[in-house]
Image 1 (cartoon, one colour):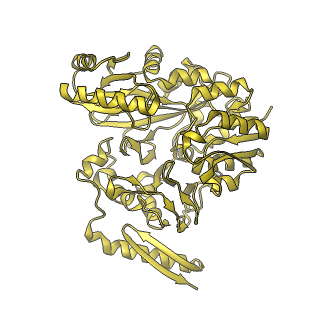
Image 2: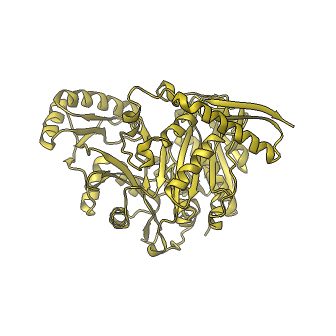
Image 3: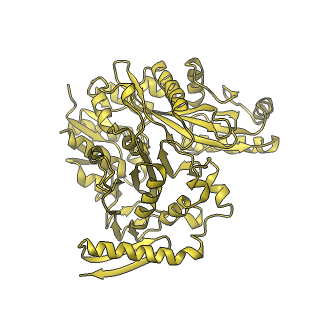
Length: 513
């Protein structure tokens, strides 16, 4: 029986994405919100909304009892967690199961199996998945850490077993750094995850972060989708993704995909999930990193190159349907890139910059005649551009949560076409009132190493060793001309009123009548 009423246990752009997909399928929606999110976009989009607590996430979006009570009081049959917050919390899934409320994701058993980094590596090894050489077990002291590190061979990665989001992770190149990493990582792990367990594994030099999207149904079927390249990160957190990967060919794609499917089947996995791998840029050897038991932030680029709506597939799986695709039906077509737009200051180490969005206008480029018509069903405009946003003009980027404003996704026939389109889209994106990373993203995509597709996980710190201080001065005139061109195009398109266009560090502001 199809689920008809869905509670969305999230906020921001992913909550809006879930609501949009649910309404398209004829399902009614319920948003939850904290006291500071009363006027947020996701609250206005839903059919109903329930306040679940004050601003801090620990007192609202992470409060399991409050979320379940909201579901029960509104008669919601299912909960979609999005990503972050409670999306990978096994206790939350178990609590929903006890209340006979469907969790739109994997069951608690599969989630718990893959949510523990130590346990998941043991399972991966049993499933025949390549794993990074290391100590599969718990490190119980600094001396133990040194002993294991010296046996594996430096450099090593020390990281939290229950970690995520770049927390509780350090690379150590010698004994002294290993002792320091043990102290820092165990402390961070206890503070962030209430679990101080650590593991140590070989650090793969010149690593690329490549992941495989999978989708499983409740009938034992699992599919893999074209890979995503996610190597460009700041503070161990992704900031830009693309599909397919410039490093991966069809043979490597098949090997990685088959191992991802084998792992999913090993734990009886259903719904959307992502198996992350480290891939050596030198010899293209690949190793299992972890499995994310949820839909990823960067899922739109997979949707673009596969022509598949992953969110709708999640709903179909939750309704008990079998996967309608076959593996041979899935192969990458074209190229897609995603830029994560954050309210942060790249010139100050990417520090978050919450506040009111005084002016907001999403990119509008000229239609691209090469764009497949099927992309319109995936929320792309005629130019092959899609913006998943959780903020609109007059809205606020809140202090308590991740400062993401939106995800800007561009699609083209090949990588260079898509790169150029993304640059134009970044230049025509208007965000005023909060500092943001638009200038940084444009600088990133103009770097020779990026253009050549040679980006490892160390790309940002190696490119900007002393931090980012803005685009080179010689580009200022070009930026001014580009911003002015965007303004003139908007005027020609019939826009009226005040418009502010930002290109890099240059702003053009005018009133059009």
